[in-house]
Image 1 (cartoon, rainbow, N blue to C red):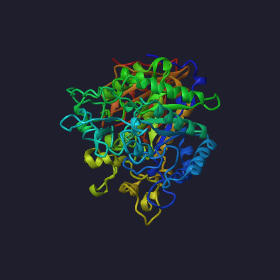
Image 2 (cartoon, rainbow, N blue to C red):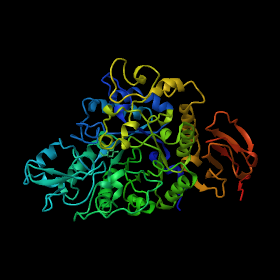
Image 3 (tube, rainbow, N blue to C red):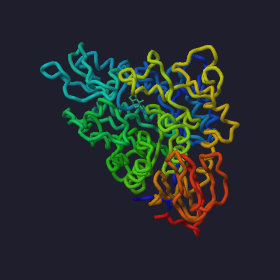
Length: 555
Ligand code: NOJ
């Protein structure tokens, strides 16, 4: 285990800070077309500053036919006219920087839209100069696909192109042909896109589907998966029937990330450090940690999705944290997320009360937290009538419908939840609970609200060197359903205790401390005798303990 804390003054903004993910189609609609847009995001920058986050990651705003809602890109260096234009992008960047926040954008590198000029050219003929920018293969003699690889959204990953008589490969929808990262011209074109945005001033990238960038060049079949279902990785239906040995994560992908790293670092200065976080769905922690690259020459961070699908039970959650802590290489920096635009809402998964404790967990672990928009007000899974499902995965398998996490942000109890002017229809339905307190306007004046809890946690984290930069240590031998850990740096020593049960529990620690924050508004602050303290149902607590006092966990 390596926990580098000696150079705390030198840690970068993306290590010390908290990232907030904006899904722009659902954040705020400034022009009344029912779809969120960049001007809408700009209008809400003061809200984000007052929330207390440090950086915004914006999901794709590029022109897209919406086969996968922005992740099927037709032009990587433009803004979809429904969402704005490059001038709006520049205002967004300046607006964030003026308020002391950073901007991270999504870099979609593994596929393009089938309407992208590159693919239109590639599919025009087998001899097209762009043909090799994509993955083509002949049918088997019986006409079936070249191998058994599956699309993550269901069915074969191979799509027949009758005009040229070959299959092309798509890891996701058939409207997203995968790029051939073994072609040097394609590589150069992709790096040029990153340069475009770095020169425009972005602070970082979230590299989309990074894990899928390179596959087995021999197109070997994936073997069947016989492992029992995981209690950490979310089930993906048919996709889980295979061990994905050959259709993603080819070892050469690390060379691609190292090249991105060099490029990004070449634009970094002490005044303007940049960074990249990659979307890596790997739950074997030593394997996941390889994405930091040899001697940290890879991604600055691979996203850690360990808490996204994990069952809300102490051994599982603690296992994720300890697994990650043990795997992060020396000098590497951990990170955690509870949800994003692809996953069911945390409040939907574990309930609204436990979601308060989950937010405390996210914001007190060692490493960079990313908050998904709306989780700070406790948004729940949207209710989507079958005829309004838009998500391609949800159309294939309603149980996987990701629209539930993408419903419009709830600004008020007004029409369209304050997301979009009255009268029009929002692109996805708003959640009815916007009328019963799950909205910003109602939560703002309420000291007990989820919004004010999140703000208090963010304030505490910003002011505590133990939280943003200190070490992590599990407290062993806690009572059943209690997870406790220590975050400390010098004299700043915080005991974090979480009760995963729906009834009260002892803390299991002796000594005394000062309660700094509880997820339960009924909990008084002040000095407590830890041995006598009982946690309320689903409560999370942050307790300051003095070096001289220490703690002894009860056996
Ligand atoms: C990863 C994105 O997070 C997800 O929303 C998208 O569907 C896939 N890439 C495929 O485009």
